[in-house]
Length: 405
Image (cartoon, rainbow, N blue to C red):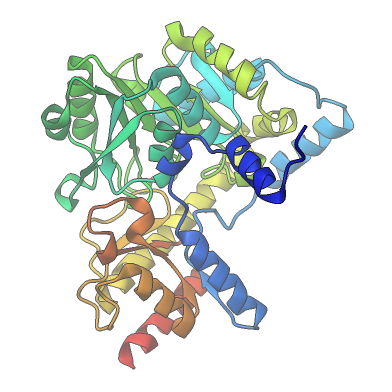
């Protein structure tokens, strides 16, 4: 018997650890380089204003925290049904009725370990090897990576300010092929903060339906809408799959809790997948989330929503005054997708270099457009206004000083 040499061991290890091809289709988050650079500056004593992370600066209100602690003290910490506890599914259904005027059967609600788990379940159920899935460009990068993880091919279609950076019925009709299986869209969207109008949404869904495809609509920012009550895709048919979350409007990012609304016929499919992939969502988070829907807690969330609107109403005109182009007022979420190409700055044609310059010279952290797609990413950066109003004011002053140099 031969004794393995070091070189043979390395070769055997390399073969054993050969990665699946799907890994190559998933790109790294470029923004992580920005976050590491910002952390290094903070370590050296710099006062860095973060306008990069898509996370509310608010945390869960006291009634939610108290409900979590009561669940722990009472020993309510064991596995739940894979679809989520019945009282929470019922509370979510009641919220659709009170907030959006929609009747949703609680049986159609699938509670998940965050919206990410919901999107993974939807892709596991619907995307087969080689399927093409249409999306607008720009869009949240993980959405296309979820498709790639299940062997699908995300087809990013450049969107424009004229269409509120959203996928249109005409684009669906023009780009649908024999390999197309469905669409994944978000309203309001990350990174643009723009929603589909009711007519856009209705027409787009009709087009998908006419082609025999599926529609997954990410509505995690719908609670953070500022210019009237938005329209849910659920208003246009029970065949639509919607994704939602307790992370954004409900300020529970680290609790990892979300939900899907799926066609009733697909509930057993999603239940089977959830049982095998996740077992169940966090039990403690589910019982805490029940307190989200109490009247006193909703009042807190509504105050916070209006504070986000106040920040938006300041930051967008301020950025335009500095020379950023923001052709569409974001109506939801907490993002501004801004064109830098006309700015008086030497890196105005390279958003990655521009964002790094802003970080190093003004100590303001923003996100370059490269993470969000392939439609003019070098011309765009994303600002998150999920930080205190006073810090946003200070960030604008720093940018103004930078551009005057």
